[in-house]
Image 1: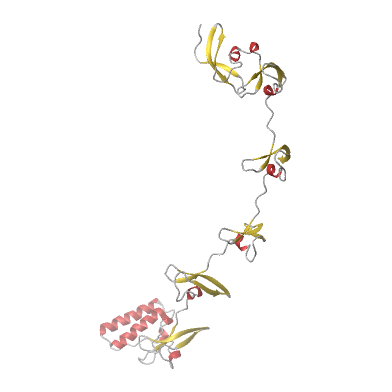
Image 2: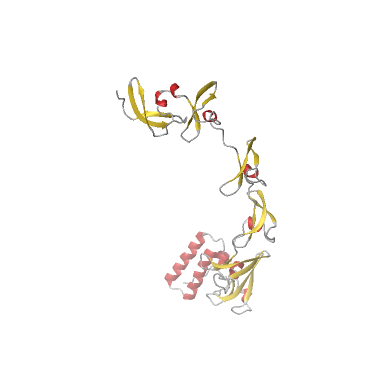
Length: 344
């Protein structure tokens, strides 16, 4: 039984699945019948063409049993290894003449050349400096292996805007750069590595420091806070910077009442619409305070008159003697706080 290899009219790109199935059945039947090896090979090639079309570099011809090869015409007068070209539609593909499985020279498309970044590291080692050009722009970088181990010329990341702003300038030159849509002005200054960086000016000092600019310690000064003018005196802070320090708040009325008096002097002070009269006595912090006279004070206060916090004290209430310790109230007055129950 003789099997005829299908003609190209039945084989090529777009062949249906039914056609592939028919070709496979014909090949199986031929193998079972013991057809010659050469015929079986051509039928197998036909089956491959039915599935891949012109993706294979050869095609079985309709004339007799001799195959012709697609892409073989460019290599008809050339030798293996020669450069060749194939035109498919409007596209011309360059390749190299190589023998196919049947020994015919066919034009096989050459492998695409690696990208410029890979070519730049050809023959170099990891860490070597490299350069390549893209769209007319020359880039410099360092050869580094990618995920597949191929050396690629990797340019360094671009410097930050503050460094770019000082490109081509000198230390001390004014500069500007943009961050988040805002333009920042500064002066080019070298950083720790020596690179010039556009450094914005420091923020202005607070008002109380500006108030003493050009003044000396002890000089009067003024500054504004929330629309209010504050008057003070220039004094150095712990760092030595002069600061306009407002005067301390006035002492409470009981202390003001004894400002120019001596201990034991009669004193008066007013709180709201009430006037109090008392006697100047030494308070817990050593300053004179106008205290109610002992006779007008409740017994717990009279017991600590002239005493200091922590002093022992006693007083009598309803015929019972109470012993305690003088404790200082928030008002500055001392009161005898009993530490034990009354005694008869």
